[in-house]
Each structure stands twice: as structure tokens, then as C-alpha cells.
Length: 134
Image 1 (tube, rainbow, N blue to C red):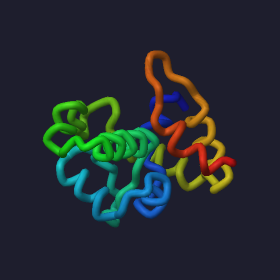
Image 2 (image 1 turned 30 degrees about the horizontal axis):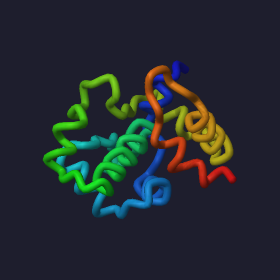
Image 3 (image 1 turned 135 degrees about the vertical axis):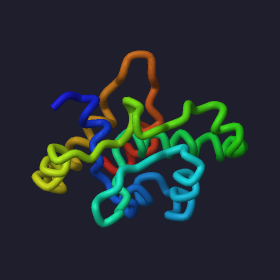
């Protein structure tokens, strides 16, 4: 499975995202309402977030803490839509893969994403989530 598919794979329910980002469910839904993040939805309408979604939420949180309002954030961050490369995907393949993953494997994937350096990009997720691996 390629790295980009893995980063877009819908893995995390809103409860886990709340713990990872220290955001409330209401804040996360508010950012979704403003199309700053667009999580995938299961057949039962449950939100599932990807690594990209979590990273984007941490970027939004950092900007809010610096005093940037929603209008400013929308101008700074490129819009997300379901057709973009960064969109969170749920396909039969990703649903099957998600069911196969144990919590330990998901934890290992998250740790790998935290330590991975992408060229030309410093990841906020590395600093924010590193506390979960101490």
C-alpha cells in the first residue's frame, strides 16, 4: 500500500481525534462545517479521519492559538474537497484494511507517520503527538 493511500486512509473515529488534537467534538464539527476538513463517512454516517485530517486539524489549532480567525485560516489553507488528492477515502479496500488493523498496528503506523520526514515540510503532528509515545 503506497504512503499516500495510507495517509488518506480513513482510520480514526472522532473520539480518538479529540484525544490526539485536544479539540472538542464541537470544534471538529465546526471546522468540518467550514470545509476546513472533510472526513470520510461510513454507511452508518460515522466520521472517520485520516492522518492528513489529524495533521490539518493540528495546523488549524495552531493558527487559532496564534489569533487567526476562520476567514484567515480559509485563506491560508487551501480548501479541501472530496476530489482532491488529500481527501480521506473509504473504499472496499480501505475498509477491509481498517478491519484487519489491530490497535497495536494502528499505533505503530501512527508512530511511523510521526517520525517520517517529508521533504520541504515540517509536520506539526510530530511535536503535538509525540507525547503519546513517551
